[in-house]
Length: 272
Image (cartoon, rainbow, N blue to C red):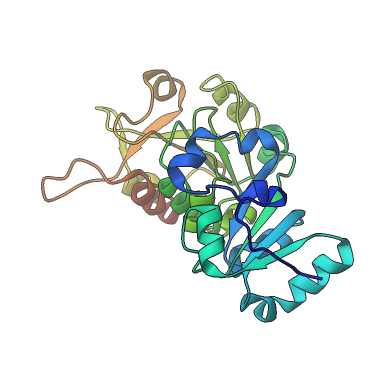
């Protein structure tokens, strides 16, 4: 049966202590083998993806709205904790207005080679450090027929709470893994038969419109960190560079916006 909590210091709730963004940046959540799923929609997408819950935490009213999840948790022996909003807020560090949290076991990531096999469109994130941008890129990737996302070792964690929330849970939908080492990993993209296009403002870059007119059959689009963009080695090792023509005195778009534009323009065509 669901377990009511009245003490925010209850040791059974250690997974949920101080989930504010500032605190989470300093704690070892990835190394503990868990991530936090927030909101009914995100939790359901995580479960559909086969991820295993360790426990749930929710406000009392959500016991009814999530009765099917509560029943499944009871059958599987997964604890469900509930409490009043002030107790939960003191425990987590924020007001839980999206219904529920789940402490989920992190899945084992697949190999990059297995994801690249047969992929027509791949997006590579090089050192994108803002979790909001990572989540937004995953949401675009899910909507625009990207087969896989690869993230560099220094890229922000796609399973960080804010990344998951901004992606609306599509981080569970789009196959992804880390590619390490990078940028040496470009060789792996080439071995898989992918044309590598780096999004960069360089003198010899193609206009996105030109690449859209004659897109490669199989393409890996590499986007870089906020501010500095892609490393010189990544640009040098790519097969081509591509830019989005700008107007109005603007030199570039935010990485999430730019990648969405490029994903749409370069999406796989089935009509020839």
